[in-house]
Length: 111
Ligand SMILES: [Zn+2]
Image 1 (cartoon, helix red, strand yellow):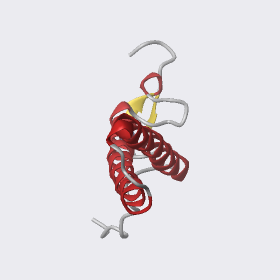
Image 2 (cartoon, protein in one colour):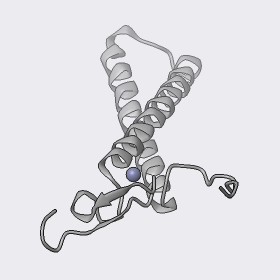
Image 3 (tube, helix red, strand yellow):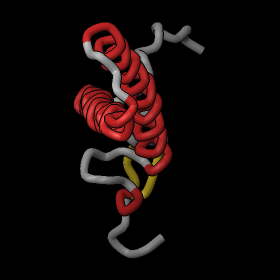
């Protein structure tokens, strides 16, 4: 252990880590990776749902023309990129501001 180094609990998982390993919100690298992964999963889900919605709207309301196929595909790709990034940012920010990803546990039995 270095001089001056101390340990504290990760705010998310409550495991003990050196302060230098934690970020400014006092989250350990494992919890940071887990919240990014959860945000990415929600980003994919929301992005695919948004694509489905836009594709349905285009299919029902526009006269599809093959010369605009590239435009339609570009529109779906941009819809996916934007909505998945927004969903990722919202989920990531939600868990970070909440202070943890682990649900509060029920009171433990005294040993
Ligand atoms: Zn942690």
